[in-house]
Length: 277
Image 1 (cartoon, helix red, strand yellow):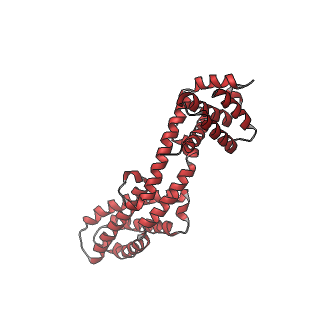
Image 2 (cartoon, rainbow, N blue to C red):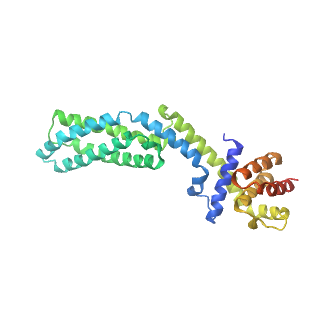
Image 3 (cartoon, rainbow, N blue to C red):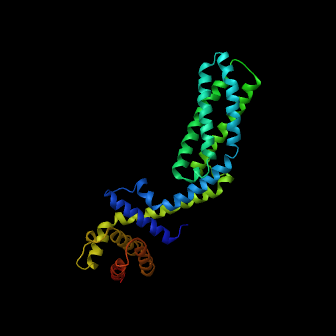
């Protein structure tokens, strides 16, 4: 179960993003900022899992490229010109994927990691289609048998990417245990924070009316956006969820110091103290 202060922080950040959008939805983009640290952690664990699960990729890719050079003329000889053309393209794709995998630090960057995922999934589809054409080949040879075996191996390796990009769909994958745990924790945190954020939005009229009573010479719309969002979330916890006021005030002031300026602390403290009285 996520910690209460973490739920409060993510709800605050998502509400802040929601206020900036000026609409009535809490869509996926709303959570990009709120869950960025958790996503960074997941990406690092995913890159580590990827390195482990695809450790044989460079060797198998090299073998595939070597046999592709030998078998391409044979495919042409036996009237498999389209298959030869496909194999040439696959050879370059396999080589490129292996280079992406081996480049030091490459998979530690989110953009490069996502690029690798996309490349691997596309290559998996191409290899699977190519496998069908190999099964229909009109000749046999040791080279062709080796190519078939290597193609199946690469299909298996690229298939493993699915268990990393969507780990919760593969809960029995032991090598992904850390990734599964981190993803589950992120989902739980988002789910609870979304409840807080949605509850604040759904009760906004009543919350703002109550806050206005305790904002001297101000309305909620006249104070800073972060301060306003923080007050609304805290008011929701006190008014609707009935969370003990001491906890809400103390942790709201901690968030105020992190995300606003020290000048905002007395305002937030004063309003919430009156609100909780």
